[in-house]
Length: 151
Image (cartoon, rainbow, N blue to C red; front, side, top):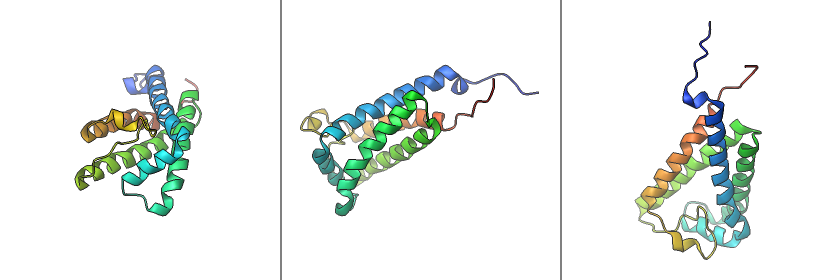
């Protein structure tokens, strides 16, 4: 006989809150990058990770991935796939920020602002890594959500 007890991570309301928060964050993060693709390409280049030939492609494609996955999470379609994709992106972002920290590169992350306003909101790389880890948690929770049949 299966137990009907659910932990907080399995509760539908908790899953919904995780989806709304994570989806909202990534939608917000995509907007400025979509409006200012040239400036975002410079942000990508500043990390000195992406080969120059791919910088434009990354700057054009990444914000669309963030936007589409964010919308999917909020709407509730392709939830697991979107959460997995965003988890991978967050792991890449954490690695990229850590890499700049190790290499002594000081830059604006370009997380939410790619425009001229970007440098005005400089945040410690340690806080950026912590923030991305905190965003990774709901992404993992959504990704691990069990498929619901008839309940």
